[in-house]
Image 1 (cartoon, rainbow, N blue to C red):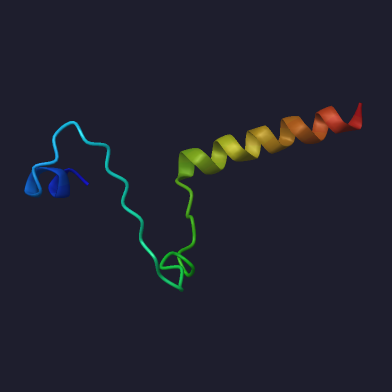
Image 2: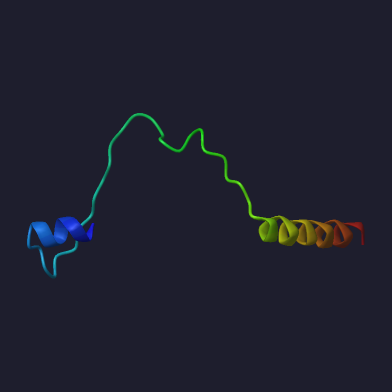
Length: 54
């Protein structure tokens, strides 16, 4: 975005870039969690399950 603003000399002008395409380029990407994120999610799910039992 900044590249276009600088190249076209559009200072102080709001710029909205809209990409139009029929296919989703991120369709096949799987969101892989890091080890820390997995641990945090596991703890959170345990808390939620315990809370539902009450």
